[in-house]
Length: 262
Image 1: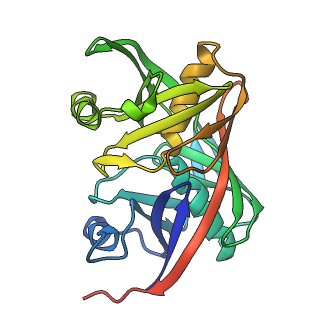
Image 2: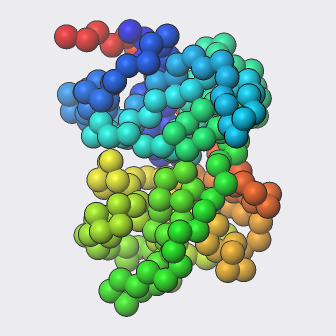
């Protein structure tokens, strides 16, 4: 089985395509293991899907995906993985430069702006964000709960270097959500994220950055088009078009290999 390793803003993924829709929970654990496998934050499997029926309308989509966190759990959506999956699909002739595909959160559109393996630039349009709660108080701080494909808790901090990972872990289990802290810097955002499924802080989280952006935009702290800086050090570009959030950044195909199952 040929698999590809991708990095998108510090999030890394193992990706391959298949004709079969199978339960790959255990395979995800094996492939994503940092010491005994390839090592990744998640596994993405692209499978065929000709039509998607949404509210009685049928439209052509290019494929659907199965997304697994490194612990084998499923996630409806992952922003960085959406860009990596789009690059992989274009490279393997599964889709054109403008594509759409089905995730657990709904249909995602993506555009390949540059297909270079090491400096690819991909834009994806996420599903419409939903504010679930704006009145969460925890340890004296105010949090919003926002779904940008998966649920995210968001709070502001003057200095995100003071992000408390243990507090984030407690919040993750209390609300079954990812946990983000953000600060506004020159009308852009810095973001750190604790991700469920990985059960630790990751270098970047696309839907987490989108949630932070959406809260800041709704509260008038940023405009509808900004840069976001995760701790990976890369720059992401987010925008809001009155319905959905667009999310653009670099994608790297770090290597390809054959995986032989025991």
